[in-house]
Amino acid sequence: MTKKHWIIFGIILCCLYIISPVDLVPEVLLGPLGIIDDAGVLGFMLFLVKQLWVLRSDTRAKKEGVRQAVVEVDDVKKPIEPPKLSDGI
Image (cartoon, rainbow, N blue to C red; front, side):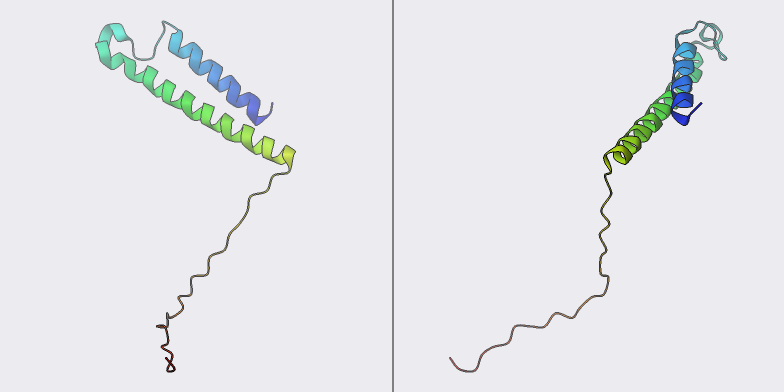
């Protein structure tokens, strides 16, 4: 399986965990604190979605032959000379 397939598989597993009634930390025992594990899985799922988005844009850029431009900046500071006055007015 490719990286894309593993990411999609992870997203599906996260969705199944969030909607399933079985939790590592049950809400019945701890009340609102039982939602912490669901929130953690949701955060991990968002991370996987971001990774899939980055992988998709990288693949699209390779297909289209898009290259990123590199701009070099000269860090040498040049002295600023004051304007010269002309003598013949």
